[in-house]
Length: 105
Image (cartoon, rainbow, N blue to C red; front, side, top):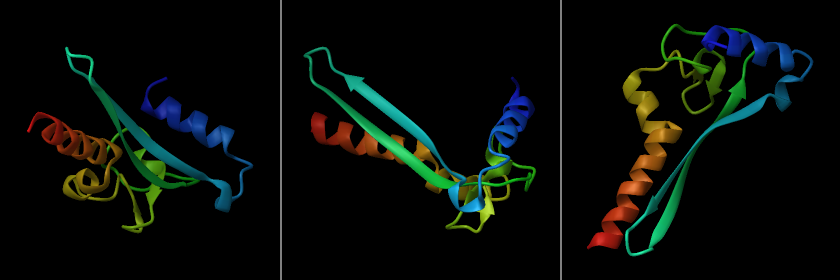
């Protein structure tokens, strides 16, 4: 599917799920392996709720359905700067940079 097809599939599969059980999360994992065999992984997660209808025009993918409690909006309704500050990818890459810095210093 494209984004629209994925969103419609999600809505269809959750149509009978009550609001309090419509939880979801974006997750990003990053793994690093050094030539000497050292390795580490980090994980970033942004938890929220899956709405029953679209809200907002920004973002991509599931963003119009993904309600983020901290901002009281969907990821499609917040600014790119707000999204980057709490996104699963941003959390993971910041954790990756911190861990990498610790290991190479």
